[in-house]
Length: 290
Image (tube, rainbow, N blue to C red):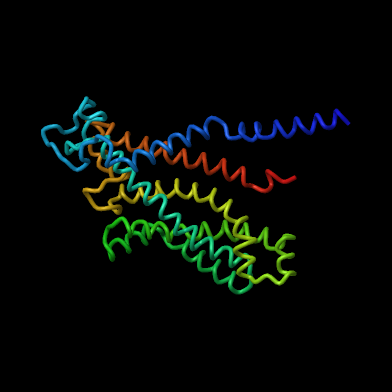
């Protein structure tokens, strides 16, 4: 009996340590980088930085110095200031666009997975049509009609992310809709709205949150690609994608102008992917099933 109690106590004390070790150093390094990027973007106007739009044609492509820690670009603008202010644009689009996807797509996916029938067929069919539409053509059409702006860019990417979130929410709802706690709630006379909000939403939200972080990483890449093609926010506002596009003209003279924003975007996207994958593994019911 004493041996049994000792083994139980050991399991209870070792389990949190094992759970912490599962996160690993890469996870915490990714969290640290994300915190640094968020802090720099939030405090950009407070930091002692030059204006990212002030040009000095006599100091074009200058190397790193005390005044310009990362040098200047092809128009004499401070590269570090442009990187930090560009993080604001990339993060705003990267966070707000998936919010549109998780709100609309998550709601549609839960409703389709719970009610099934014709409504599910209609929702899944409409999402398939949206997925079949070329995203670049849609971005070109909306930009040509409404003009280039941060709001339009965010809405375009947000609409394009709806099908992915809908599928994740629908798949999670399908696995939960016939579970014992849902059947018990139905037997007790709970309404559909109460079951969806009180029983299903807390369980569907965790996989959606993990997928949200992965969606942020993809959105940052998509925004960078559109800005690289000239479909992003209009100048003089800069994002990492537009900085890469402007830096390609100076690859032979100053390759750092393209590589610095590219490396910053790479590390940010990698960090969101690592954190998202880790949270997805931790919230996977198959991994934690007893």
